[in-house]
Image 1 (spheres, one colour):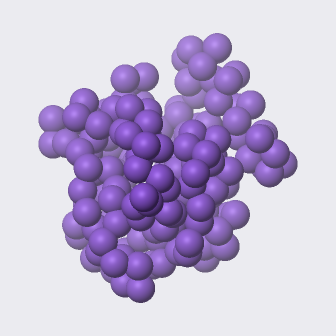
Image 2 (cartoon, rainbow, N blue to C red):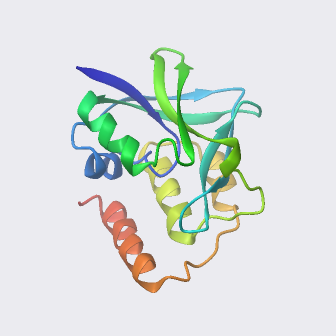
Length: 167
């Protein structure tokens, strides 16, 4: 049994998501108006991760089919119940899809993403052919250097693999 999952942040890139949950299969992308992309979800690493809010000019989603057991695995990775809540979003042409939305207790508008995280989001946008204007808006998000050298090195390695499209 599979479900539809709508990614919008670091899970946009199909290879990134497949590395996390092997059953992930991209079924399409869609621009949905009335949403905005934010980097204000407080993470355990003290940086801002992506979140969506129900206001704004719109965002692009990548819609994947994943098996239910992999959705449970993704719930653990995304820390469901400890920062993110599972929410159904209606994506025209794809129907209701599961996605993650930050819990109010984990929103901090003063946060910024780490540079490697912002790059993962941008690489997903690039891989999926999202418009240059959309990518430019994300690239202008101020990002910090991760102060934890080991974590930064590991994640920059993932960035390089995504750039080369090899996992």
